[in-house]
Amino acid sequence: MAPCKQGLGQFESGSRMSNPDKGINVTFWGVRGSTPVPGPDTARYGGNTPCVEVRAGDSIFILDAGTGIQAFGRNYRTKTDKPVKLHLFLTHTHWDHIQGLPFFQLAYDPRNEIHIVGPKREGTALLDCLERQMLPPNFPVPFSLLQGVKSVTELSSGDSLQVGDATIHVAALNHPNESMGFRIEYGDRSLAYCLDHEHGGVDDIHPGVETLAKGADMLVFDAAYTDEEYPSFKGWGHSTWQEGYKTARELDVRILALAGFNPGVVDADLDLIKAEVDALDGETVIATEGSSMAL
Image (cartoon, rainbow, N blue to C red; front, side, top):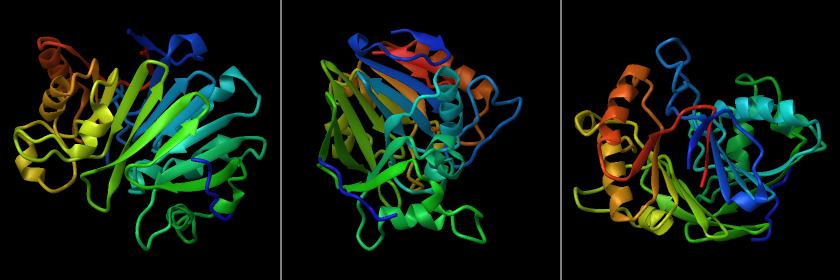
């Protein structure tokens, strides 16, 4: 397959089809970073790697293709057997953000129209990265069998893309091997997605995060660590829930959604964080798999 350049609330359990008159609807299907961590200690908040479903009018956007994308695909098929058209936006190609793609059942159905959009990087084509993870002896099924994938498009920081009545803006984040964040605007609603990202100085807000998140209705932010843990992981490309909170308040974000949790963070740890953020000003939620929010 050759790359094709295209033209440029309330938390509820379970996903639902969005109403085009209701703005942006967000569903979390994967909230972990690095590696999936299924098991009894992560059952309540979820153990899949990143995947967020965004409905904006008639458009479907999927943010990242971690293992959570399998749950999205299964859920979609329980509601309809009709073909689907969607745009899959990849922040970067570290394994935890693309490892669900070879198992994404909707991508194998040639009736579907899936457009993959990801970062443009010097010397490394996005399509090559996606194909390589499915080459033998690492995987028995080639990328070419994902017949529902109709295009692979690369975008650079500062680019924008119009899909239906939604506009998607792109900005670079701070992460090893480069990562980009997205802002989806639809009507008077907006969602900023900033995984994976490492904050800078104590009082600094990264210009990419500021561009994407300023005044957003929701910011999905990298909360891999706590401030206490962070010094041991400085330079690894991730942030803390405390930095996310400060960033959201500074940028006048309406709802902060913490996600991208380190594999060692269990439900009991997230309960403690939830208790802390519930006592703070503003609205902060712990991203939970299978939960939806209307913006």
